[in-house]
Length: 310
Length: 284
Image (cartoon, rainbow over all chains, first blue to last red; front, top):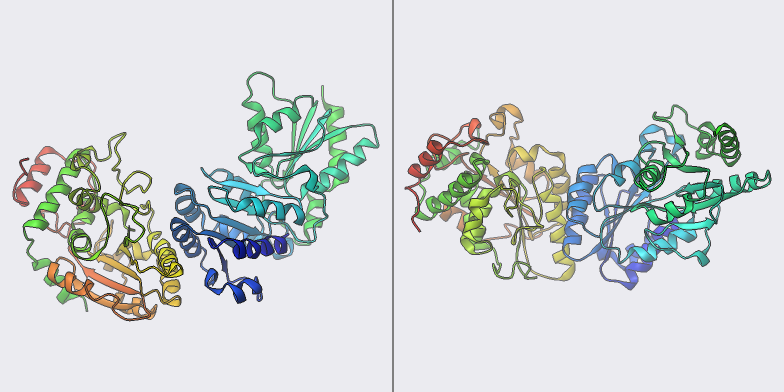
């Protein structure tokens, strides 16, 4: 997915002279083709995130469209004030491509995890927050990103993520994708959790429980109409995210449904990470297991929840 | 201390009629809002006066003119000095000064680029202007355009790590179209910079970050003019100008006093005392 995102930056840069790339001391060889062919628009800066976001703001104020890449928490934790003031207050078209969304960097420990990034970015006025499901969808997002008017936070996954998106369903920033039609259980997910949602839905279907699936790749602005339509026939709404249960997609969906005063908010199960810094290493997959985010665990949890509903 | 002769000269500098007039515009603004960062505004005035009168290219009636020099007041709390110049040059009506900080005013306690013609970047949180200036200077280079970028910072502001991150980047990119000016009034909010966070050896710090550096009496209009007429100081390097100034310059009762950094409840008597010190009210 990161590879797809970076390749698309180069493609966009070759097509559009407004596109510039800024990285903060990324891996050797990153975007080598762009560095070779468009060196004046390729900036590999030092380890100074506050500065490179301000630099991007200055370039954007002058009409350029900067694409930035670093590890997610080094954007969202390290340089939050620069993101809020330089990018969001000025509403500038700067794209933050955040490597290692969620628990991708499980082996590297808590400093490198991005488990509150969606919550933090979602809280900023003018910010758009997107987490796509696979590399193919990343290409569609990146093509759309060029003319998006304001700042954009793009959460990357691990790479080599199972391809679950479908070009036929199209892609538009801010437009959630109904992957399976609304049913008694509605799964609303973001990012690579779409793969787990699909598998969980298959497991449940085999036991006679039909699930709708809504892929809310854009966490902000949330596609409120799509969320409400998807939730309307559901006995149970389930949100699924590689993120703290609080503040991210689950919270956004709950707010959206609760804000609809014309009907009662349906029972809503928010699946995600607990309010704690994970204490283990391992892998993204083993952390999913620990926190109950694997498809079979999700299916079990839904079945148990349905049984307990009045 | 190496800065003492400059500081003594700043202390002794006399203000001419235009400097007193611009300060009266600042007092008009303070009177309108009943508050403001007084000391931080008055130390800045000659720096901004010379930039706007003699150095920068701009068109007040066309604030987004592409060829203009870019100006960022990174120490946004000194905005009243910039407002005085913007009113004087016709970017904004003088009447706007009296609306300072009122509910629907365009002029607030920190400059807002979304509202004020002639303000390039909204500042207030410190340490943001120089990184943005680096980006603007790179943009000018990418376009092959000749505009320069001026960033004015406070001395306390340079405590922020992001200033030095940007300084590293400016040195790396050899941004000779970037000029950083520091209003070195030697007082930050709590007290003397020498006690709160000493930045000395200050000029050497900028040199170490690959800037060409000059020091100047920041209230000496002729000296500022001469220095700023010769930019860049060195080819292939960004410029840093350390302007030795006096916080509260022009108001004997405020000069060099940390408690005049900001006032939130200015009395009518205090306003009158300021006008008196500056030659009396202007009668339209």
